[in-house]
Length: 340
Image (cartoon, rainbow, N blue to C red):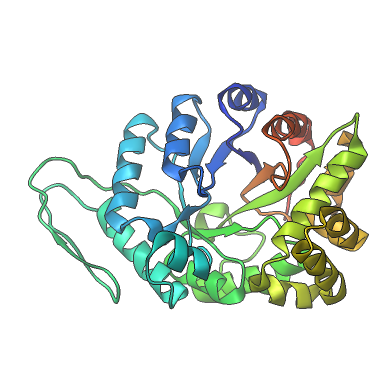
């Protein structure tokens, strides 16, 4: 596994690349745009891979996704990837104002249309005929040329993972992912749809790619605060009912019910207390540097095989503390296990 992280900003980002970070990713929310962040990454790094992980698939047309990547490719050839996520039903309907129904079918069609633009050659019409997207573009300018940029899908549950195996180059795992969820649900679904290629002996080039977020909070001076921040992040994620199959798979219904009650009451301390030790050790890497290294050694099979994004908790954590967590995580680069 290669060590990556969400873009921590220019100062920490340059330091991180010099320390050995091999990939940076950009998320997306109401106050930050994925492609603008990727532009900042490629402008302030030299070698690291860069891409959205993830961009909201339906916030832009396939044309807009592809043209952003073409412009970025001119600055960072061979360094890009594209991670797309369907986003929550309410985000699509209420924030983006786009159709929210049938997200799995819609994102599969979006991948096809994005690839049609990325693979377009000069002098050829850009054609694609799908259920949701229809393209027939005659671009009378030497602006194209095939780009083989990997496309990955944020895949939490089995159906989206199967879709990623069928239409994309791989998956982006969520920060909640545990060993059992990777091994029992996500990897089998991807492998079945991709026609195999799940063997540990398969080289990365012949099997679907695995990127994934890892909740990481390391602080040798205040490990208890780091652990509390990791617990709070886990609790915040688990307020989303989309993840109920994940909760049931681990038998965590009772503590999750408690943390959801605490969230509704605005009691973040109770949210922290509701996250059990079993949940914490299965999901996060946190505490002191020594604690974090022990966790990595213990979790070899529960980490993404290709790139892990060691992500500081963001729920009720200041920008300054997130930057400190990013710097502290650099001490883990030499401790990465082989997930196989």
